[in-house]
Structure formats: structure tokens, C-alpha cells
Image: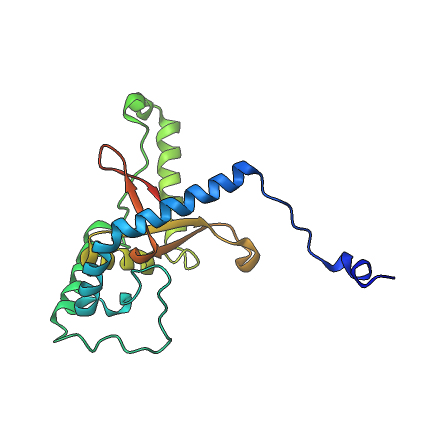
Amino acid sequence: MPLDFKYSHLQPHVERQSDYAQEVVATCLREFSERQTYRSLFAAQWEEIAELIAPEYRNTFYFGSYNTPGQKKTYRQIDSSGQIALERHSAILDSLLTPRNMFWEQLLPAERHSDLMKNREVRLWLESTTSRLFSERYAATANFAAQNLAVWRMLGAFGTGALFIDELDERRTGRRGLRYKAVPIGELFMKANHQGAVDDVI
């Protein structure tokens, strides 16, 4: 029996991509390359900022960068005043805009349907859903508080922050819910539309 035939069932089945799928991949890679080039000036400035006030983000703004675990990143800091100011800035935003001890948002119908608030059942549903959303957000498994603070830090240091919201993995926790993750600014390549609003992210 030929060797190739004997072990052919162990070979992984590789399905050829369609021409459309190949074109989509090529377009995405081309656009990603363009955005890296456009963002390179910002990346250089962010690296300087990170050296002085947010050393945990050093060497994270260029695609393919790698940080050795335990690598020292604070040797460019003259003093810690900038880093302390950033911590205070983050704490102030967190306590004023997203306090943990009170509701800081409320679900309401769209303005064109504002007359729905006259309906008692609608009001009760909106109140209970707001309460449930607050409870889910601050559940231990959601990790919102810590990740939200990281977003405030990025906003204060680099001017942009991003929070990724995902469905909680039931296989690990055994319960449904939300999961929050602050995405480092170095991993985001954004694109704004003609009105200046970010509508696309790689």
C-alpha cells in the first residue's frame, strides 16, 4: 500500500477560498496597512506620552511589537507627578460620570416615542431593565469597574479609549451575563466618516 494512501485520512481537509473571500482578505490587509501608515505619527507621540505618564503602555503602539515579561518601562520617567495626575484624573471621571453607588444612566424610549412614558407598564419595564443592566454591569464576572477605569486612563493619557462589550462565556462561569474589556489604544486602528464620527475599527 502506498505511504501517501495509508496516511491520507490524517491530512487536514483544506477547502480552497472563493475568489470573493480572497478579495475580502486582500482588501482588509491593504486597508490595515494603510491605517498603520496613517497612524504612525500618533503612535510616535503616544510612545512619548507613555514613557512619561503611562509606562504600562510602552512599546504597544506599533503592530508586531513585543514586550518581554518583567521588562522595565519606567526608566524614562523624570518623576511620578504626571502618572499621579493621570490616576487622579481617572478617579475623578470614574466617580463623577460612572459612580458605582448610584444609577448613572436610564433607559428611555426614543424621542419620537416619548409619549410611551405616559404608559405605566412601559415606565415600570424601563426602570426594572435599567436596574438589571446596572446589576449585570457591576457583577464580579463582568469586570466593568476595572476595565472602565482603564478606559478613563487611556482617555486622559492619549485622548481616546475603547471598551469592548461581549457576552459572558457560559462554559467557564456557568451563568449568562456581560463581559467588558478595555482595548489598548495601540491595538485599535480607527476610521472616521465624513462627519468626523468613528464608524469603522480594525
